[in-house]
Length: 232
Length: 232
DNA sequence: AATTATTCTTACAGTTGGCGTAAGGTTTCG
DNA sequence: CGAAACCTTACGCCAACTGTAAGAATAATT
Image (cartoon, rainbow over all chains, first blue to last red; front, side, top):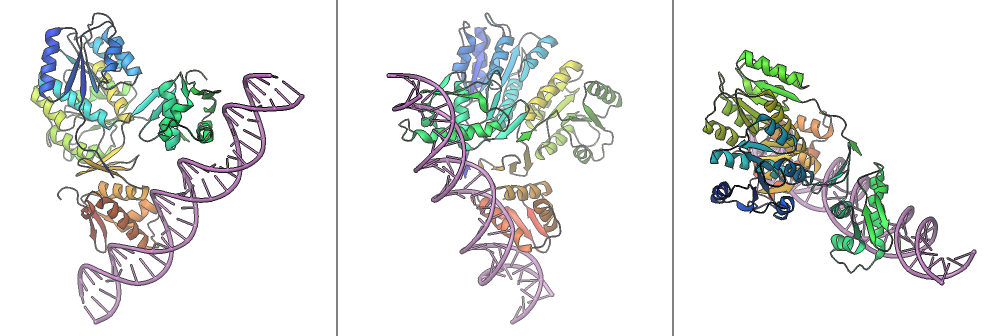
């Protein structure tokens, strides 16, 4: 039995260069009980946003450095949470473009606070039920169900297989040390039996072979393994 | 291995009493490749909508018989797909109310066709990744992972348990005949062994007992079983 | 080429969870 | 009370997953 008690504290990240509006938004959201962070430096907005681990991104389009559109695309390509675009630009082509690039909703300023809150709540509800999809290259892994998606195919991994795949995907295209795999699988980096990792790796490869993807896992002799998921 | 080939044909159901607008919408959507059905009789709109097995519902609020709000609530309580409200009523409280009752998006007429199409596409994308959640009363069942959600708790059912729960939930609050349970579980309504159903029912009840929900399955002597999921 | 370290593969066994069968107990109703 | 309907428990089978062990294959080194 699993108890999913209480509501997670949602971290909303505001990306808006107008200080007044930013603080107003922050007030509105905090009164509603959300945890809020604002981006104030727009030199490297992407890194700043990601560092906040956003549960939702409130995004303006007119930004000093990188445009909101670009931010939108980059965040979505990393599978980052719901994005709500809030902007003064009310051209329909802006809305279409933003939605096309992955924004999940589009509101125009001025916006009634209750409307904003309702839309935020809606997105939260939707995303709460969504599977946790880890993306890397051509691979997509549902960390909850252990389903692996590649192109049009999918297959079900066992728990060990899923863990290994997760670690490989998170690190890709870097090399994963054997030590780390041991740590993730058995909690101890002091790996007693070299073999057990290899056995599980063989099993993962055999499973991946069902969709001709086994060769994507490369062994780096003396170090560990590496996932090559971009070419074939 | 499972191949999820091709894109399903999305069935959009239009619920709109103005004939002209209805046909215009139908045109727009069909040009885009959607399969469209319209509700023309509003005597029993809920049944009519459900019969269409909608992949998305385009809903007006001002309807002759049952109001759009009520339709919205009922559809969502049955876990029926994305609902996009399209209405001439542009009061913010209508929007809030609709979203509150489960609508997934809210657009006001007149609406630019491209905006409508973009929003529809967005909802499709979101729902494509969503788990298939069957709702009935206080129960929610993920048909894919066999997870059952009740209030703030959740537990994992086995395949048989999930199937039984599914049938019970779909029928609720009606009675499910033993015959039908046999059919769903073992493909044959000619049930050879009475006992096996009872055993599985005991198991389901034992599982539900973990969250004190066993008593929600009532035995209807000589007929079958019934799920009571609304009160406690 | 021979040696050695590293990695891979296969087979086996233990564990777990889900399921059907069987047998006996309990409840309900006339 | 007695029979029909229903419930419960225990048993054994099967499939999936995992760790262990032993030997084979591969790569690096001398």
